[in-house]
Amino acid sequence: MPGPKKLDPSSSPRALLGAELRHRREAAGLSQEELGTPLFVSGSFIGQLEAGTRRMQADQAQKLDEVLGADGFFTRNCVALKQSKYPDHFAEAAEAEAVAETIREYSPLLVPGLLQAEVYARTVFQGYRPTAPEETIDELVAARIERAGLLVHPTTPMVWTVLDEAVLRRKVGGPSVMAEALHHLTRLIHQRRIIVQVLPFSAGGHAAMGGPLKLMAFPDAPPLAYLDGLGSGQLLDDPAAVRAYELTYDLLVASALSPEASLALIESVAEDYAHEAHRI
Image (cartoon, rainbow, N blue to C red; front, top):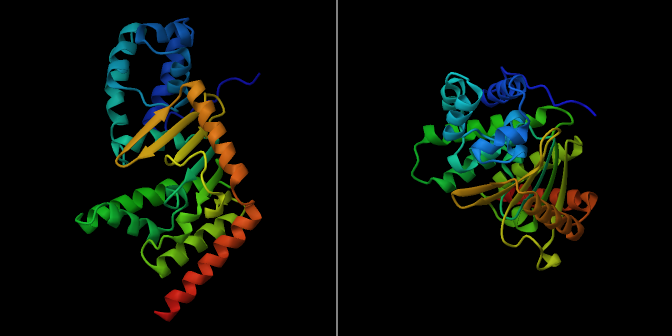
């Protein structure tokens, strides 16, 4: 069986803490379960901290310093984890996304952040914050485009997205913005970088009518599910809950158009928007 993935301590503060935590735990002769007990967390959660898929909290850092005799190392470095470009409710999910091996997502209203064209992202943020200064919008857009840099790698993470047909039909920013947004999406599909399926209106009621869903799998840590709400989010690692959401996603895939039919529909809608923009 392959050993745990080696983290690059220079890649992020969380990778640094994960690598150091694993080193100090093993030096202390403790299993992940044994270290989790005084923190009132599971051994799998300790594994997620070591793998860099979960964020270490301040109280956990203090307890780890005490149990492992780390002389304040974790407490001091935990501060760096709070410095995020993302909203608090999404920061931990974004950090997990960055080390995920597989990302599966259902989006009922918007093109998902990883797949957004810049002009579309700008329009979305302007809608979220209609009174924000342009500098704030610029920072948000820059963070989103930087996040999409995950797709620069030709194969990892594997991204599989189910879009509700409403994502294609809602004119976010008008026809020209939508044409660019959907053309950007089709370029990624043609590059074989992502898999996209469209859940058509004709599918009727479905398993995820309650809202968006993101599933993330990792090479050396348990999978996570992220539920997104209005200014809120919930990252779940409970195995039973994650399995239930995996079934939800499988049911969506079964009800959606095939990738080939989905691409044809997206291209057709994109051309309609392009022609409409040209007439304006």
